[in-house]
Image 1 (cartoon, rainbow over the protein chains, first blue to last red):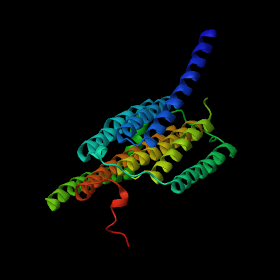
Image 2: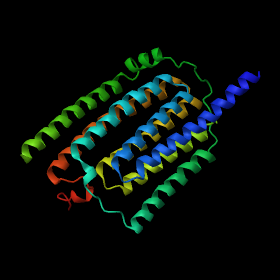
Image 3: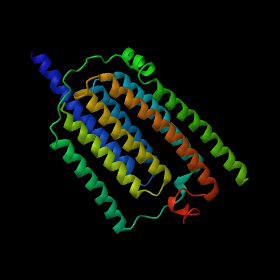
Image 4: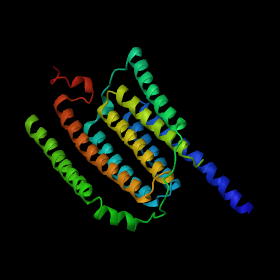
Length: 175
Length: 102
């Protein structure tokens, strides 16, 4: 009995630590002016979100988050930084009115969304399945969501070809 | 800890920080990073609703997977556009890319 209580409180504490990691990573991804810090903050934040997916009961999605976001997207951003050397280029600071307007817009949005999230009486669905397995996800992907799956594949293919063409043609034009 | 509103608040904070970043940064790569933060907020919302409210737990996970695919495509095409722009302008400040301004 006491053992499960200890484990529960430990999980509770670790949850808030993970939330802190997510916030710290997000702040690090937005506020510093050095772009390398931004990428490191993004990696920290996405790893924290993967841990939150574990708390939400989906091991598969946590793995996919690590694999796709941290493993692919962040590394691609690091490559872009290496290729474009933006560290030596100074971007002038924002002026105060624009900064205030940005903070105002973001906080108005946050207040609206937070009010909706806290004021609504969320009701769970009447019948809730307990089928969290990857097998079901695979079945649904190939039956009910087959069209969306195909469209996503097409979008990815077009994105890859477009990326190659964009960078390749611009090199030919500028040289 | 395990209530829907906590997760929704975390996702709202992520989205708001991303929105602030998109509005404030002038570094194109910084804007791309902020957009990734916003997509992650949406993803977290899908997973939270999936865990606490949805009738079928597989559907929310599939939606989150689709968002990840879209994010990967967006990052690939965005980074290639940034590289092409950098080659022409020698800068990744958005305010320098004004040739199409009406």
